[in-house]
Length: 161
Length: 392
Image (cartoon, rainbow over all chains, first blue to last red; front, side, top):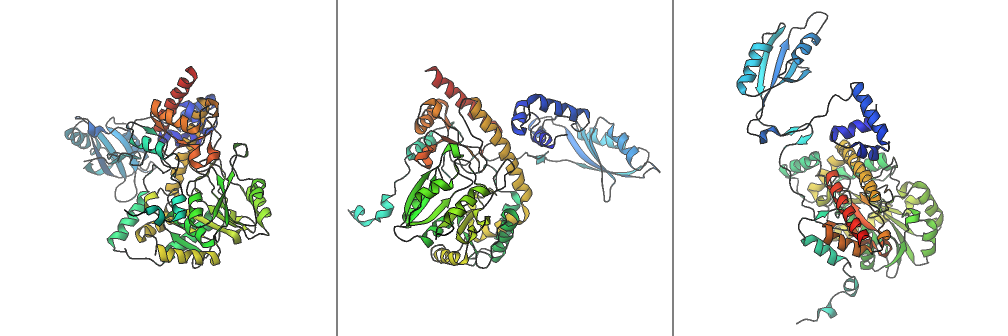
């Protein structure tokens, strides 16, 4: 495991092996080997792109669905959480502290699709006692990336300080 | 019409505007320039700090503070310096909050210089020291630092410049523009040299947070007996990305700080109060933000150094500040020629080493206060320029 490589990739998944080697002081084959090993160990689970979908006409709709569950004896919330995670429409599943038990991020093409999915699939699952669906209206920040328009560089071209 | 020449102050008129002003002016007016020329962080001030300033404004805490600075801030500075650099200063009598590090340097010099006193200045270094010494009535004495000494100040070089008129030595480390740092042993050698003298050390540590390769910043005031003769200068601009807030501070023996405080009190009154409240938050709550910025600088630093070496410009690894200082001697051009032709041919702006003193000849300064993509593009273009030079 190499935390330095993880930190670099967390910031920029497309950082080249060559650049990672420069920054970590490892050789390129060493970097590749380490990344492969971390993938094999399930530490690195994927490389995704942060996209501002709202820039497109047909972006998807997401909702945060808070779910209350009657935990099963011996299985707790594991069983239901894993089942929910298998749906194509589900982007993330988290176990929560507080009023609700699970937070599920659902992603569909339209509002109706989300409503249908929650009503037909999630709400009726065994041990789900209630759902509360909150639609995402606007995204401001995603995976550490500020989606607001950033200001141009107002610093001068050259300075001695 | 008035004869201004006969009216104006001789010392001030004698100070020449920097020789590379012309180059700066050309660069500033060109469009589509990709610059590595600015010595100012690209990160915005961390939001917590800006938010603290907004709250200060909302509560209307916008009056003068005490001359020395808010008591709360001086306490925070004291504990920050102790936790970071093993420095111990009394908030009541040994710390003064100033308008940037610049005011602190100026006031520190004016508090000690009598007419004709010599102040030793290692170069290449930030441009303000020579004019400030002159404005205070002192005589600048330059030491040319060398690449073979990693641009440090060797005690032996210092020894050669010390006379019975030497009042002070400027210690500008971590260094703009070379990226050099001084380590404990370097200061121990200087301690040995100055121990029986009255020489004051003015240590400009504005880049103290920015050191790399696991080397923590060492202040001369934390080395042996040097504290009694050291005036520490520091500030918020570089570490917390707060350049426009104009906030710095100086610490030292109360006998000196009380004199500097008089200068400050009569010419400045107090540092901006809103900035001072924001700075309390900076020191108290922003370790994680600062750490993230330093990590990012470190990544850029390594990519930039490798980039320069790959295109045939030999570049030492800087261990502090946020500048690379590659040698351009292999091109046969002067620093000014290199920068002017690079700007014209590839529209990349970097600063000739001579902007920081004659001993900067043969070097250029490139700042890595830019995104990695930006740095990569700039270095690619400098690489093309190098190819052009070779093909001529």
